[in-house]
Image (cartoon, rainbow, N blue to C red; front, side, top):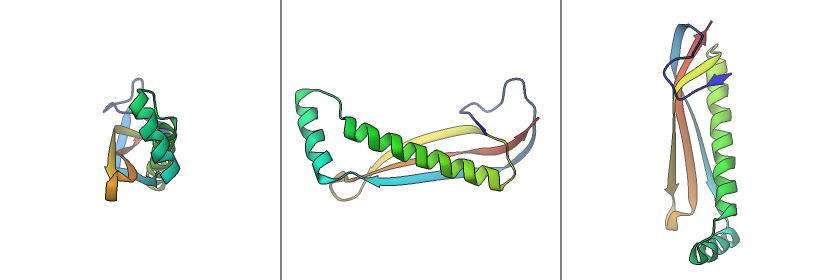
Length: 106
């Protein structure tokens, strides 16, 4: 599956637009990771725990996007947009959503 943020595919012709597809993932960060992230932020470092959770959420969202496109008979998704949000009480959840247009390319 080709996935791209661009509206076209270099060297390929889009023969059919099959519809908008999406993928979402919401993950919670546990208390110990939150505590560690707070300490890391105070000393100016990076929070590896949050980076790992964001990466995991992004991978899940892209898997859902790919599954949805495959179910429509697509072999590519163009115009992909990736959004990140913090949700929940005291911002305890991370959400990644991806969307794009499923296409058949030749």
